[in-house]
Image (cartoon, rainbow, N blue to C red; front, side, top):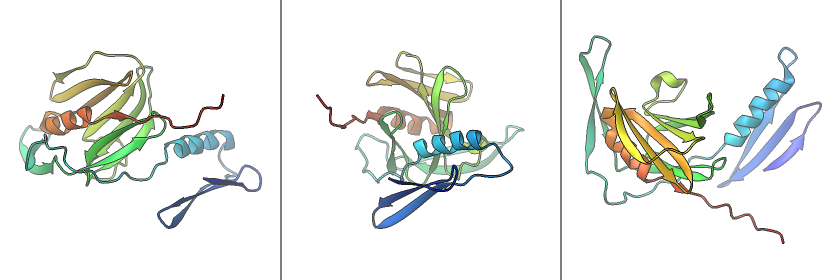
Length: 198
C-alpha cells in the first residue's frame, strides 16, 4: 500500500489489485474524538483484505445440499434452506496468519475479541453481516489452548481444532454441522515469508 499523509490527521492509503486502485481514507471530524476514531480506523485497516479465491471441493465433502430447518420463537418450522457444502471459497487472516474456507455465496466479517478468551471473532452468514443477529457460523481465534474435539451445546454444534500451535473454535446451529466440520478441518497456517536479515 502507498500511504499519503494529508492535512492534520487525515491519511489516505492506495492499494493496487487486479487492475484496480482502491483508496482507504481517514478523514477527521470536528465533532468526534480524533484519537479514538483513528484507533478504530487502524483496526479496520489491519483487518482489510480482498475476498478470497475460489477453491475446488477436496473430495471428502458430502455431495448435494444440506437441508437446514429454521425455527421461530414458538418452535414451529418456518423455512427450509438448502446450503451447498462443496462450493467453498477461501479467506486469509493476515493478522493471525491462517486461512479458512466458508461457503462461496456467504459473507464474513471480523471483530476484535471482547473477552480474554477470544482474540478475534469471525462471523459468517448467507446475508450481509450488519450485526451479530444474522450470524450463522462463528470462528474464534482463542487466546488459550483447548484440546481438539467437538460437542453439542444446546442446539449449537462446537468444534475446537489446533493448527500450528493456535486453537480455533468453530460453531453454529446443529443444522450447519457439516459446514462447521468442513471449516474446522480446512484451517491452515500461513507462513510469514518475510526475509530474515542476519
